[in-house]
Length: 241
Image (cartoon, rainbow, N blue to C red; front, side, top):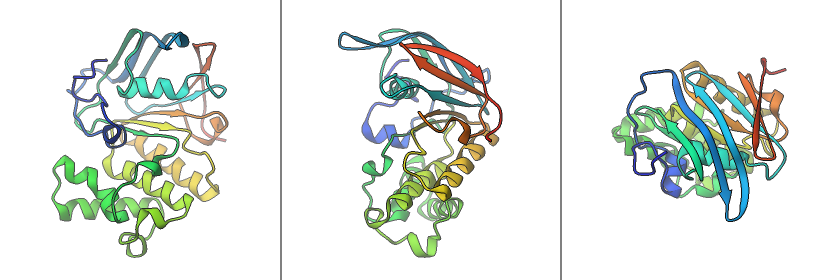
């Protein structure tokens, strides 16, 4: 991947907002790893990983802590560049959205409404259109917009803050959605909302890459990629149990 190309993630804000468009793909492939390796200093993390994720697919990335799951997501989005091999993205006009393990740490707006609508307005929607879509997104995550839109995101509970992050993903409808340990510390209701987000994204043709170490069966997914010793082993996966 080339950090100068449209669609690449090059800043902390871009990591979360993922608004730079990329040219539409001529195939279903959304992101492709071609013999990708990555090294932190002298420490090899990923070794010749081959992976192709297409439109309408959810691929779960699993492995022990430190196995390279987050690194793989950051490479997929363009925040990191491979030490060897090539990452190719065809994310289309709605681009890439990366939600890190603690997305609420990137909140900055004074109200929940401003937080959810920010990316939509940057994309060119009018203020009214962005707010209407943001209200719908809050409804998707079971946060009543009449109660939550005017509140500070920093005054919410942990679970509510995580739902605001999911609302941003519902609102922006990225073509490549990267989720890093999204189920961590969520209650059953939060996990249900997360499952809805994954299903919603796949149904509208997005590619979803979801890194987790303990929630493989929580989501309907097409494949599970297990990282071990820097190498990626792939197995098919059925619907969530």
